[in-house]
Every structure is written in C-alpha cells, then in structure tokens.
Length: 137
Figure 1 (cartoon, rainbow, N blue to C red):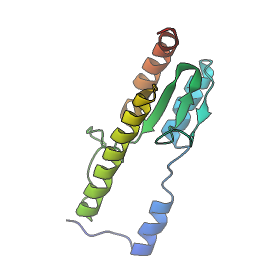
Figure 2 (cartoon, rainbow, N blue to C red):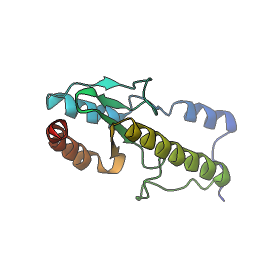
Figure 3 (tube, rainbow, N blue to C red):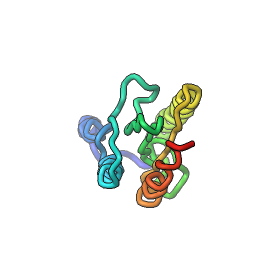
C-alpha cells in the first residue's frame, strides 16, 4: 500500500472536483447524438438512477459510465492502492446500484444502454445506429 502523496485536505479538494454530471465523455455522447438529429432529456430525476441521457421517443435510458467508478474491468478499472478497503466497498456499491437501477428501468419497459468511457466512440456509433430500429420494434 503506497502512502498518499498529498494531504487529506488537498485530497478532499481534488475529489470534490470529480463531476457526476456533464463529464467530458457524457458531453461527447450528447454532442454526437444531437448532431445525428436525436433529441433527449438530461438526468431525469423521475427515473431510477437518473440516466445521463433519456431518449423518451425510443424509451431508452443511456448511462455514460466511467470505467473506474462503475468497474468495467478494462485497463482503466484499476483499484486505487491507498485506502483499498474503502474503494472496494464504494465501487462494489456503485456496481450493485447500477444493476438495481437497470433492472428497475427494464421492469418499467425501458431499454438501458451503457456507454463505457473506454469504448466511447464505438459504443456511441452503435447506439446511434440502433436507435431507429428500437422505435420500430
């Protein structure tokens, strides 16, 4: 276990700057969807998990996931070495909450789409290609 290289107050300041909405990956997906002609709502508080993007016409909720925070398992999903027990619990709870929200949304008749940070370009293009098919099905 490596010691933290910054003070507790500095670490707190850094962590406060981590955004949960309007992140760069989310903005990329939104811009790409909008450029392709799709219209959507953002962070709908009425839906479980407050999806990042809600395409009501397609009854589709899109979550733009950070690989570390939601544990994708790719090379970006590296468990922090300091305070490992805390991070393991936090990330496990995120994964559990994501699964619960997806199950609840599916039960409500919504499609749940995940766009992972490491697969941003490919996942977004795939989503855009499938949307017109989703509305017909």
